[in-house]
Image 1 (cartoon, one colour):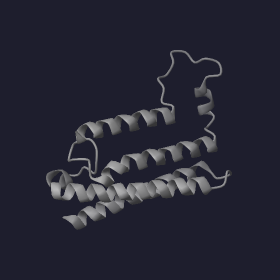
Image 2 (cartoon, rainbow, N blue to C red):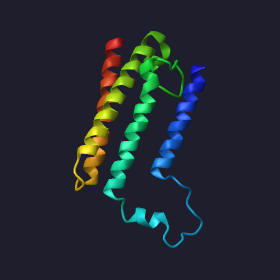
Image 3 (cartoon, rainbow, N blue to C red):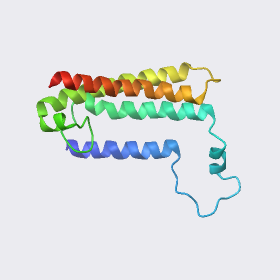
Length: 148
């Protein structure tokens, strides 16, 4: 049963990301007024901010099953390393820690993205999103090292 939940969560995340980021197949011939032309000129900062906040929500949703400990060892979803997959006693605490770390990172990123002024550069939006996420991943590896 938990495997089905994991697959459904992954499918939901994939569809959400696809919808949020507008991943479409390339048309055979570009049409006048096509959205791809506006993307070539660069996306609006507010659109980028909205997409990154939505990505934070997706990360928060992904982290909840990890925090609750309902994801069994598998090859698709979770904090998958050689140490966690070979030992169930390490899998659940490592995944719970990573879930909490990702949840905190997503909340912090979303809060800062909301507070940043409208005139902020796009690179700062990306840094605001990526820095806490990378910090969560590094903290998870440090915690995993302590578990071993």
